[in-house]
Length: 280
Image 1: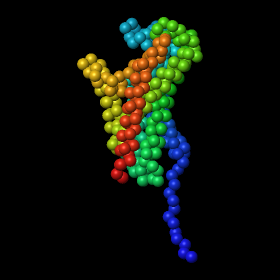
Image 2: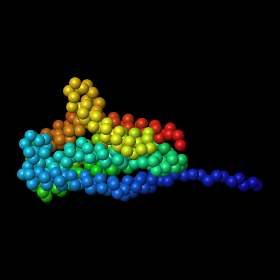
Image 3: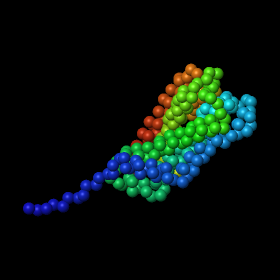
Image 4: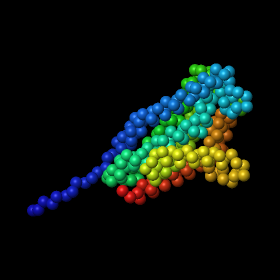
């Protein structure tokens, strides 16, 4: 009887362990923690400035005007401001590290050669970006709620429609704003992840993502390009303010979610397609 040596079967690590390892890597990076701290400080600075100034200046955005004496408006106002620059920047930074950063450090080649499905690899990286996006939005909102109640004050939520919502309903509106903004930032992360799959330079990913969003914002202000506005990711970003209206107007919010979902699907499809065919 002849014994035949069989090569060892390479098995991949359990998905849960891989995801946890990725999350530990993302959440322990000093610059990611610094970014979360910066986001937490934004509502504090905003609420303090409004309180010390005795209220926002006249002619400013209505959501900022409503903050005075109405603390639960502050988290939504902070999300509106952070969504224009800080939140996309943080998400783009994490997405840039996910693939382009790995490639720049020479570790992506090892991951692609490992006995792990490339589709699963992109999925794990996407989970890391998604968690950071949701966490970033949540940090802004939680800091805004605490700051609003402690510094600005207010009992319940006075909506932009003039009605007053009790504390429970007010917190529900803030949670709705968090969920909506998280989907928008997830779409930004998907686009950045797709760009990250094509380059070895994280700075290129951040520049391309932020440059694209700024371009979208500029194009969205040109009336002659009304036909293009429905295709721009940033078109309905200001719609998060609608959570402060009573009754809640959901049409624009739903349109924004649908648009973000399309960008999310396209971005992830491009990232998976590129990594699946990447030559190592």
